[in-house]
Length: 77
View 1 (tube, helix red, strand yellow):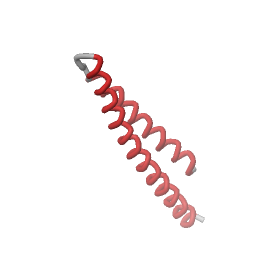
View 2 (cartoon, rainbow, N blue to C red):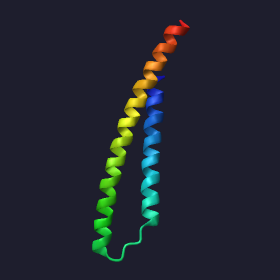
View 3 (cartoon, rainbow, N blue to C red):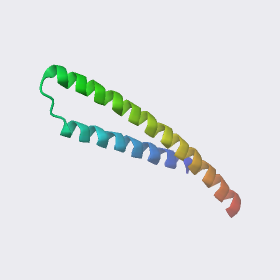
View 4 (tube, one colour):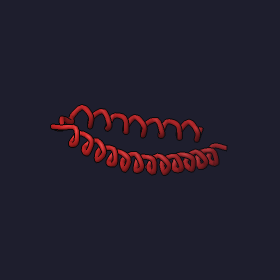
């Protein structure tokens, strides 16, 4: 069950990151190619930070989920 929870959490984080990228791309309208490139690089860097934060949250949530399942198993059995 822990693997299923980990996959679900990773999928959720990935979907959140993709949604953020799509939202960012849909709302940007830079004036020229240099601005486009600088803007894209800045957004990519910000997204990388967001993805790293989400990954850390996913890992923590996965560990918490595993611990909760172990506690539940101990109580039930």
